Length: 166
Image (cartoon, rainbow, N blue to C red; front, top):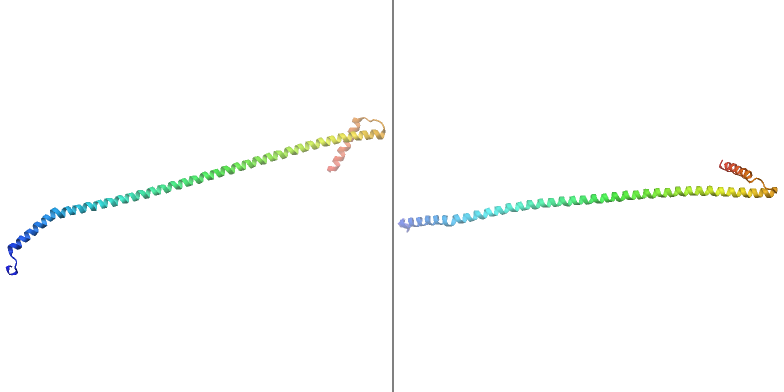
């Protein structure tokens, strides 16, 4: 090998130096660098897992929020529907009460009209009977028994009223 310009001892010393250098680099550089890279990889992996947990928690919170909003909306609609039903029932009760009051007033007015009509007819009969008695006295020239004359007039009036009804 000396023909090539390589000395055996120098080559052996360089190989030994190279192996020592490799061992030193392995223990003092490669292992710490690999340890640091493994640690960093583990931290990244942990961070990714934490991100996934946070995403899952955010999705769960968002879903719960949507459910609460939906429940609140449904409850609000129920309250509105209940208020509308209550209002409609109150309106119907008020209408029914107003209708009953109107019917009562109409009935009261009918009774009052019937009473006044009967009263007026009675007064007219009385006046007619009195006028007839006075007229008969003037025609006959003497006073008749008013009570007997009144009975005759009432009988004639009743008969004429019955004839008009038929």
